[in-house]
Image 1 (tube, helix red, strand yellow):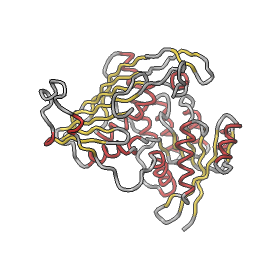
Image 2 (image 1 turned 90 degrees about the vertical axis):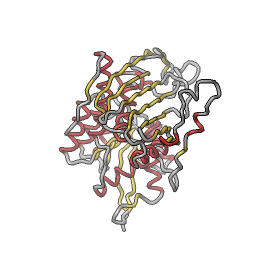
Image 3 (image 1 turned 180 degrees about the vertical axis):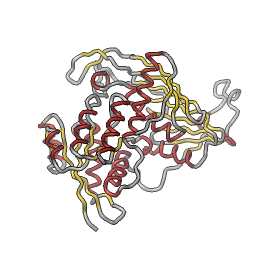
Image 4 (image 1 turned 135 degrees about the vertical axis):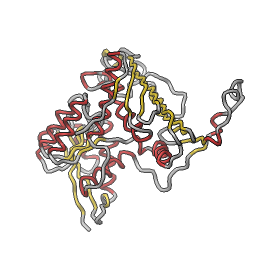
Length: 382
């Protein structure tokens, strides 16, 4: 049994995702002695932090045991590290990933992988031709609630799936009375912003795996809050959508409905709720909890709910119990799967082609808005 050190470049390390999700989970793996591999070896991530601010990088590196860091991506890519993670802003991501591929690094990046499907597929093809492992973060199905939803789907709970509904979002402050919870680039098209580009990435893989592949989309998008205040206290004009509605056609005949907004106030169980209805039962899941109602337990609700207090609908659902053992961070599970993919060629589903499918759905949704019509979703192939 041997300890194998594997260098990982994190570009965007001082950002929220870079620090709290990627760096923190890789350091946790290292702190526990490494990731066990099939042959008994332990894989220990060895981090190289990349960012724009030397002071912030130095402080971050020092606070976690003197990690390596640099403000030069060229310098990082010239080193011996094997994996490149890109979790900085989306707009210039294809150029950075092409540079990492040219340097011979395996690619594991945040979504969306590129602003357009053509660029996203180009990255997949370049990495494939170079013989490199590649993937995109798809974390939501590792959250406890959605993991339960996937498990009961795989167990055949729903019978024939009829429809899936996604209701997601929350109120993002504009910066006048409270600080905006999302970075300003999210609201600027030129930097890769836009709610659909950001979140369709999640909805595509979730629906593809929870129900069946998406085959058509029709969308409507708006900008509800036209002005915001950025991180420097400067007012700016929002030129990206903050609200998106979509109807989906799904391969097995089911229908999908997505309501997604950064300008809505919550009166539901979670910021992200998915409901699947089938002939044999229905299920509703948020990020942490999942509830089911089987066909045999379905009450007559049309007349039962016709007068105030006539029926307590929430009480008629059964909660799916938690899995045994401690909960593991979804990003950590993504990283463990990719590290095993690189180290021992273990199977890995969310390649850059899967990332391109997410970009494709967003791109077709934008076209649907512009052309005011349904758009077919063709199959993507290398």
